[in-house]
Amino acid sequence: MARNHEPKIFLFLSQILGKRIFDSKGRSLGKIVDLVANLTEPYPYVTDILLAPRSGRKQMFLPWQRITDVNNKTVAYPVTPDDFREPVLRENEALLKDALLDKQVVDTNGAKVLRVNDLHFLKTLNNLLLVHVDVGFRGLMRRVGLERPLDLFLRWFFDYTLSDQLISWKFIQTLASPDLLRLKVTQNRLARLHPADLADIIEELDIYKRTAVFQSLDVETAAETLEETSSEIQVSLIEDMEPAEASDIIEEMSLSEAADLLGDLPQDRAEDILKEMEDEFAEDVRELLVHHEGKAGGLMTTSFLRFAPSATVGEAMDCIRREAEDMDLIYYIYVVDEEEKLSGVIGLRELLTAPSKTSLGELMHTRVVSVNLDEKKGQIADHFAKYGLLAIPVVDEMNRIKGVIIFKNLLEVVAPQLGQ
Image 1 (cartoon, one colour):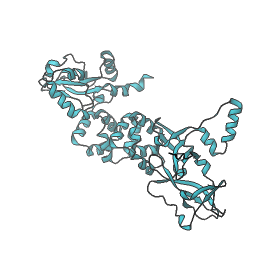
Image 2: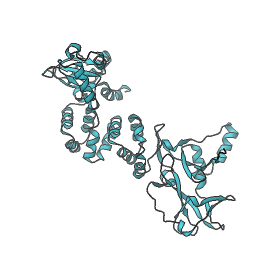
Image 3: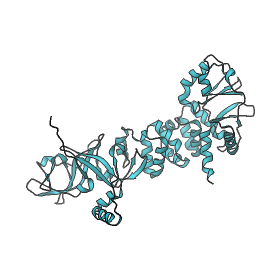
Image 4: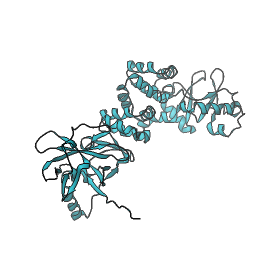
């Protein structure tokens, strides 16, 4: 069976813009000043050209399907007056030069912010597809007409060929405007990034794009990303939001992170957000806010698992399955008496390997490393280093457990000072 081997023709936007369009009789209709594309997936397709008539009349849209090449001329054929329409974008459409050229985009594969120097299209019999963005120096030189002189210079003097830096559209997240962000959000490309990578990207952007990107994320992703950003950026992002929206995101954060963030906000702003929170979460946060952030009470979380010594391994495991998603700490569980005094600790591995009917009082280790509420961060760090723990409980003067410090939370406070 004969196969249809359609030739692959690639074009750059810089090669298309400025081209003069002629009608079937050779008369000039004007020149291409932009392309309109439907931002569908996986690759946007060009629907129209934005035509600037030679006579100085207002710009119009003309269907791309009418454009063809005849004897090295770009011809619109067949074309009727009805083919020209007002330059009004339809749903999911964008002007590519206006929206992307010289704009920042996110390469979600490489997790970095880049500048678009050119656009790369695949021309088929029926469509012109946007398949890559060009972020390289060669693309910039092509736009200013210096691509060929640059190639000759590099080959002559250095025996080197500068390659194009093309990134597949499948990995591109546009940042040009909130409208374009919303169009791409349905693909959830930013949400696929690790929160730490997404935080790095947000920190690179100016305040307007940063806010637009952050507010385009779903609540869970926004919370995870917020935890990875600096306190200054956390404050700037939350201050731009309505209290109800901010509270939804902060409630998805760990208690200690939420308390730190609210502690950095102006008091009246923090209070407005607390009022929008669920009562139980708000009460836990208020409890943490009374402690100094440089001491154990300000570093701890109150979202951890505690049980009576009479509870069994099976009962503890059932509780973990129900509550783990809302806990900041699950790799240790703590055993407390009826007065909340700390009696022992059990590691998750020990819990998983013990018979289900074993009581926690039989399984627990009674020699527990703990710190008091006023312990300073330097002393806490020494405890982590000495005992190799992942978390340390915080107790009051009566040995009642008040919270737990997770190593990650301590590291975020101590790490900035390590290079000093």
